[in-house]
Image (cartoon, rainbow, N blue to C red):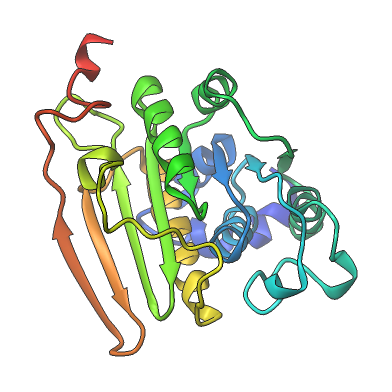
Length: 250
């Protein structure tokens, strides 16, 4: 570990919950980030500044002027450029001691499964449910810790799943494709800092897991920015879940 890294990580090294061993585990860890929008920008920034050894960023979208208010890794000069490539450049500048990889094409099921199997934790901050279900299924199959976050209007939510899907629920236990209430975040209004709050919380959960390999309880955390309130709901495993109900047989 370089002297610069030791200086940067000093506050982590002083934490009983992290310390030298935990920080080394963070440095040895790999995280896959799905989407570098408002949520992903915040999560990626703290993963990089905290020294996660390898961050893989999957996003095939380009920077748009409407992104700039909440997606803090981008500048007006970046409009039209691939988000993943800009994010890699900014994060590498933020922390030259880590490795950051951009994936700028939509991953098929097989390709996604291969990437998920290569990392320790997956952070899903995408804006559509089709991708969320796909990511969930890959995490269940590979038994990877999944951190899922979403934000819309003045509301946000965060949930963690796995990696033991024999007894713990997965994302499909919380939401089913047939649910009429599913609402994608793309194109809807959102107060700029709300995705940042959720992304930062996702980074916290990822770092806790990488530092000591301890998964959090499967709970849905609901954030109401208007009332400045958090609510926590326990997620139950569905016996008929199409993804994790038979995970022990896979």
